Image (tube, rainbow, N blue to C red):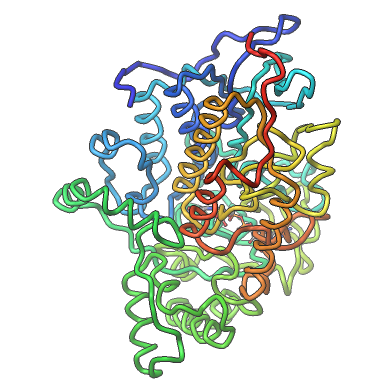
Length: 558
Ligand code: NAP
C-alpha cells in the first residue's frame, strides 16, 4: 500500500483543454465512488497511467450526493468498508453500527487522503462519450469540458444508483415553493421548522427522511404509493472493546463476508420455514425483530422461494406495524400488501412507524388518492390541493443501467451500448460485453449489485480487471472481449436461477419497473456473492477461455 499522505482537497487538475491533443493514458476510470476509488488506487499501484472522472465535486458517489437528513447505510459499517488495506482497517474507527452519511464521507475522505487518490480525479466533470477506436485499439473518452483522452482500457465505475429520477407527475416547473431532491441534496443545512413539507416516495430514502424530519417540520405530508416493509435497524454506538476485537479479527470477518451470499456477516439460517413448529417460528421472528438489521431475512432458508412462508413473515411484520401505529386507518395504509416481503429492497428504520403517531405527520395514500399534478402552491391529489412550502422528491433512480446509458458508449463497428441493451442489459459476469473490447464495468447490471455489499463486489471486480490486464501485459495481448457464447451463457444462467425467486413478483427498480419504457425483468445475478466470485475466478482460469484476445498490432503507447 502506498504510505504517502497528502493534504489533498477536491480541485481541478490539469487537463488538456479544448483543441489540444488527446492525453494518452493506460486506464480511464469513470466514477469516484467506492469502485472508482479502489480502481484508481489499484491501477496506480500497477504503474499504469490513470485518470479518473467524477461528475460530483468530490469523491463518494451516492454518499457525496445523498446528504438528505437521516441518510445512513443499512449494512453494518464494519462490513461496508474496504477490505483491501489492513492499514486502513486498523487506522479507521467506526463510531456506529450503521454509519450516518457524514461519517461515511469522513471515511471516504480518510481513504482518499491516506492513498492520495484525489490528485488522479478530475471533479465536476462528466464523460459525454467513450468510443472504441478499432484501428488504434484504444478508447477515446470525451468530457463535458471538451477534453479528449485516449486509453487502452476504460473502467465504468458508474454505480447502480447514480441517476436520480423525478416522478412522472405533470407541472413540476409550476411549483413555486422549495423543491429538493434527495439524490441531489444541498450542501448547506436545510431548516424544516414551521414549514409545511411534502415528501413523495417511501422507499429506503423516503423512510429515512420521514423519520428524521417528522419531529422537525411544522406539518409533514407523506405521499405514499407503495408501502415498504421496514424493520428496526437498532443502531448502536460501537464500544471501544468491540471495535478493538473487530480490528484483531478483521481477516476472519472479511473471509466470512467473502464466503457469504450478501458479502457481509449476517446470521444465515439452515432451516426451512415449515420445518419448525408455529411457536418456534414466532420465537425466531420475534428474536429477529428484537435483534434488528436484516436479521429477519436470515431467519429461514426459503423466504425468497416459498410464497407461503414469505406471506407468514410478511404478516408478522404487518402485525408489528399495527402494534406501533395508533390510528388503525393509518396503520392499515402503511401495511404493504400485494407483493412478497424482501421482493423489493427491504428497509431499516429507527422510528418510521412511530412518526405517524405525531399529530403533525399525515399519510397521503396515493393509491386511493392519486397525485394528479404539481400546482403553484403544492400538490393536487384527486381529493384536493395540499399547499406546501417545500416538496422533497425521494422518488428513486434509473437504477443499474441509467448511468451507462446517459452518455454515448460506442463499441466495435460503431455499435452503441443503448442498441445492444435495447431489450435490457447483457454482459458477461456484469464485467465485460461482447462488442466492447477493453471496456470493464464494476458492480455491473448482470452481477449481484443491489443484492450484496457493493464494496465487496467493487473489490472483486477491480481485482478481476487488474488480473486480466496483468495477464494481457504478460502475454503481449492488446484487447480482451468476451465471446458472444460466453455472454449468452451467463445471461441464460442469470435468467434461469432467478426464475424461482419471488423478486419477480414485485415491481421495483430491481426489475426496471420504476422507469417508463424501460425493459422489464430481473437482470441481477441472484446466486449470491460467493458464487459470483467463483464464476469470476473460474473465468480467469486456464487462459480466460471465454474471451478472445488480440495481439498488439503495433506499439500503441504514445
Ligand atoms: P425507491 O426505492 O425506488 O423508492 C422510490 C419511491 O418513490 C417509491 O416509494 C415510489 O413508489 C415513489 N414514487 C415514484 N414515483 C412516484 C409518483 N409518481 N407518485 C408517488 N410515489 C412515487 O428509491 P429510494 O428510496 O431512493 O431507494 C433506492 C435504493 O437506494 C434503495 O433500494 C437502496 O438500494 C438504496 N438506498 C439505500 C439506503 C441505505 O443504505 N440506507 C438509503 C437509501 C437508498 P412506487 O414504489 O409505487 O413506485
